[in-house]
View 1: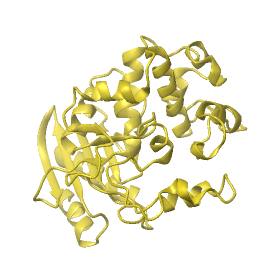
View 2: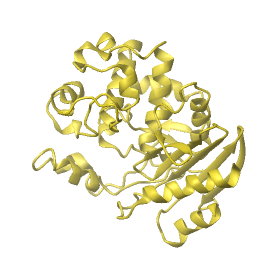
View 3: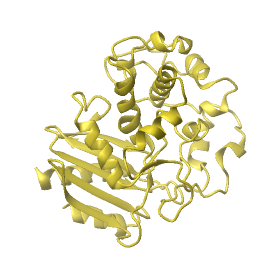
Length: 305
């Protein structure tokens, strides 16, 4: 089943490249990639940055997370705890083009980023919450989030920030055309030059909030191989509350990345899946690629349970 799903990615031209790796009880039990020759590719993992870097760094810098964000970052003006931010329960909007507003990211989130309905018991997925968390980490450490993340990733081979247009780095979109259309919902006639028109995005983070925030922010910016992704995922699995930044699937917890990436962990934490692709190259195609990734996760769980 899993081989058939992955073969379909190639036969139906759903992505130019992918790498799928599965661990069971901490050992590699499956590996398939396309192309199957050449160097192991680094992929822009997009939102996998949230659970694999930002979440881990929060617990590295704070001994507890059930205290208000204003304790460490009063200038944010957001009445939510770190725990609520980590679990997407802080009452924030999913996304804003923060780089298009005249004020700082913090000011933009305070002025524009809060949902009118406020906090609810049900999580509302938010990039903004994780950007705030990266600001809190930087404030606590007294340096930039980029420097903190870079030092952290030094312990994880196969993980980088903005590696540049190397042959072993998978490119993403030609210009941020998809994000430009999203941004038009928030800013009338946004400056087209802010969306890297005509440029093949290669080795620079695809997400523009992260790109304009030094190449990495709390929501995006991690580049990794499948092996590097799995090392970070193993570090996450070791944490007592490993499922906190993840979504609940059918017998597993998971997280997806816009560029075509995803991770999944079985409920008993014995099986871990890392799937990386550059689905958005050269353009963002129509179709539900999330459903494809869930087929991969389900097939992996069935195959190795």
